[in-house]
Length: 83
Image 1 (spheres, rainbow, N blue to C red):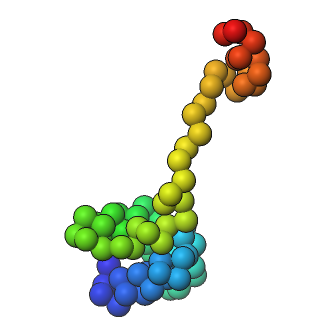
Image 2: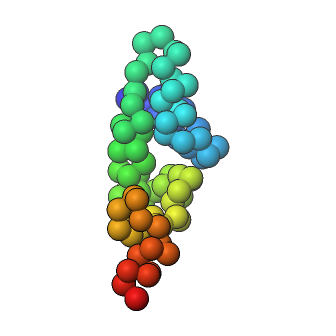
């Protein structure tokens, strides 16, 4: 990634664009191919060096829900079975 491209990507991240949106937008530019994974790698490297780009990720504070049982069981069925 060139310094100019890095500045562009960081500006879009600060504007709260997702890495997927940035990569998709760059696909239409001739000669610029970069994956969303590479953008995430840059964000995490920035965090490791004390940067704050990761704070602009959309799901930075969300936690995953725990999956209970199989997809065929609802939570009420699990409670009845275990109760």
